[in-house]
Image (cartoon, rainbow, N blue to C red; front, side):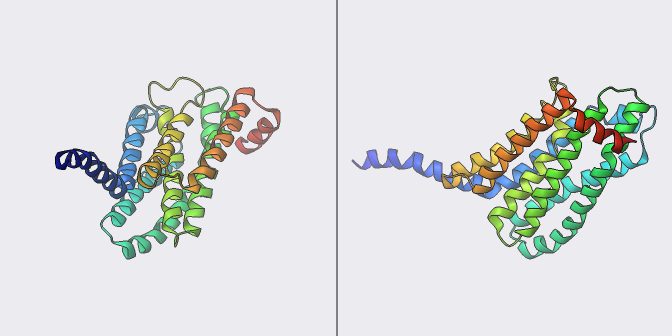
Length: 247
């Protein structure tokens, strides 16, 4: 009887230990995973498309790359501060992050038509007008999720999930530069996969998925399907808007 109880208790203890580990380190691990995705994705193109590009891209692209990289570092820092229980410092640094996020949004809406124009005129790449919907949608989603995270900064459970989703949205450009991404807008699967890891974490730790994921992910998928349709079918109303933005 005693030996049976010991054998039964062992898997339960191991499961509890694994659950505590996931609960403690998930968001820190996700920040590092996002950094790895960004580093690997852009490492495939940064040399020939930015550092040694010919013709040279607009200087604004360098600024955008620097601010984008800073955001990834900021997300890692904030996750680490929460992990080591420096919550007050996390909140103080968070206001710097709010300014950084605002800069990201302004730069994102600025650089997208600039690069569409550069790709069309200088590099003679087709369909950049139709594709413009993709980066503009990404930065809009980032603005919405991070904006809500700032609004709900006093609700940690909502805040951290919204920050994670906003940062995951930005990985689309990195996924799109990976060698095995061939189908149009296939990188949306990478974004959604990262967010699904958050839902999986919730199921493991608390046996239910937080409402932030239940609402955000379906809306994201709808937006992604819409963007894919507009891009593939070159919807007339969007082409007119894109031409006015590109100039």
